[in-house]
Length: 501
Image (cartoon, rainbow, N blue to C red; front, side, top):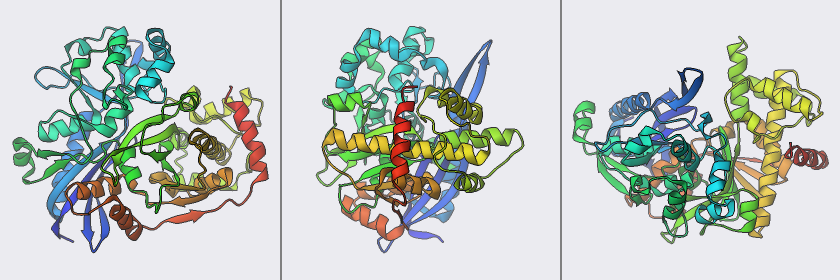
């Protein structure tokens, strides 16, 4: 169907795949159409005995252009917005050229960098200036690694751009960092609303490479002339939604009030609340929570996602990859069905343990963790996946309890959005583990939020309330309620003990 009103285009790059999705507004309903889908993942490069992990950004750029070119067949493209995962970045030289392949956040160069950072500044000071969860994958520690190794690319760099900002630069020629993605770096001061210059100086990171920060909903301009000629398309506005994919996804939560916890479910499970201000307290530091930027709400003020990044379906994804490599090519549906048939709450792991951070033989790692902690070792794929999913659900319970404790408020409803909502077993386990009402959907939350934030920025919809009403009208949601309780309490005690492992 060709749209006469014009298309909004969402370019959504995730850690496992990328999509170009078009959207049209028809009688206050959003209609999505997947135009182009492509794989994404790390590329390993050997340097003698060392191996580094990178993103194949030139292939991603080619896929983005392919998607835009295919989208024009559906009608006039009014605007496009791009979002990606957080923390990773590119460096440009004085001519605007890319200085090397951007690193993947799971690369080992950040090993031990947290300890190195704490030698330069106390942990409490870093958190006070940034409000960001301590994870070795953060941009701050990637940059600190370059400082400690005296990386030539950092010495030559004139501009730092996060991943969506790099692609926006190639689209428009404009060098900016969008607010929501800038906040993921742990190089941003949420109280001052600027880069954390004092922190950067203490870390030895050059602060002059960081560009101006712009807001979600900014219009960067139109496509560069060379792209217009290459793609045969003109008049397309490039906007910044929330350029961090979670920021766009959370904007698409179909909530009717603010009293809820949300989970963006995918490779990572990011769980939190929407807050008008960053929550930088002794509790949020102790719980290692984060304050990342969100989109505008009714008061036309940036919100914050007070949340916790935890491992999501990564363990299952890596198990599936490992089994496929050995000739057992199970689908996700098959793995979930086998897990549903396995005995419940037999073995548990800490999904956020360093053992599970990097790619590898995940089934063997899960088994080794269970053996080391004196538990029954899961053997079959169903038992292993059940262990991973139940452990993820118990991690939800832990984060949920700490969210309530740190803000002094109860939340009885959890909204789960994103691709992980398709795992109905995990949704039910989340309800069982937390005792909360769980509402799932939309699946394509990131693309939905991306597109509707474009529409909001162009006054095609009037408010965030109207945006949420469109989501409720346009997409099916499902509801889950706890089916069992007492044995989850015992399992939770076991899970808490495993965190010390």
